[in-house]
Image (tube, rainbow, N blue to C red; front, side, top):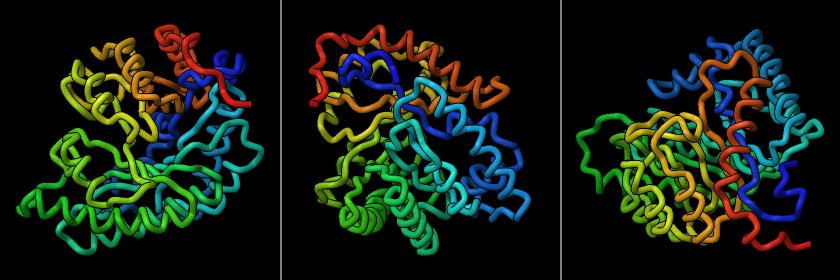
Length: 314
């Protein structure tokens, strides 16, 4: 457990997304799941690939469980068999299972004019809700759109996203799960806070809010004020650095002012985990990814005024 948590302070505890391990995951599995889903339909793993995924998740959880990481977000895919992966995650976890990231891509796009894609998005989000319930996570993170060109007007695609996410929020709410809509970085629906607010207002459910990703809104110098605009809608936070483009760098590798970012999060009353969604591209193992993120967090948390944060309730 990190120092702030040991001392009883709710001070931006260290979190990690399993997508931070993307560059140490076997490339075949990345191609068949993440990349395939972005370009078309994710492939379904065969028996050998599912065995490889189980081995990778065992390595990942061993690295996380033996670290100072306090919270974890589980990236979910429909490519692999979820039963064995859920079992591995739940095998004596030493971290808070904070959130589940729903699948996304062309055929998991709630704002798509293609009905098949909207159906896929709904099914994928429902599957993520099921995983969240089973592992005890309280949040499902969803992408409201995908970077696919369509002729359909944006206002129509916003309505599609609202229709799908309203159903997701309803089922999630019945299961005590919150839905965190993530702002997007490219041309997709949700690439401005205005569109995110429109979606949240349209869904109009008490369990919907924002997953604020510091890597998905631009320019970087506006991030602190954008956090203040979101205020208590922020349910979770993805941490990575940028330079005006989507980079997923570790903090201090880009141009974000991290002291201002942490100050803004404190101002709006967010003291959940900082979920690192940073790609450590030159790492050789899951253990190295964890070590690099731990070292980065030590530098980052020094910028936060933890002594002014209220103690955790006991």
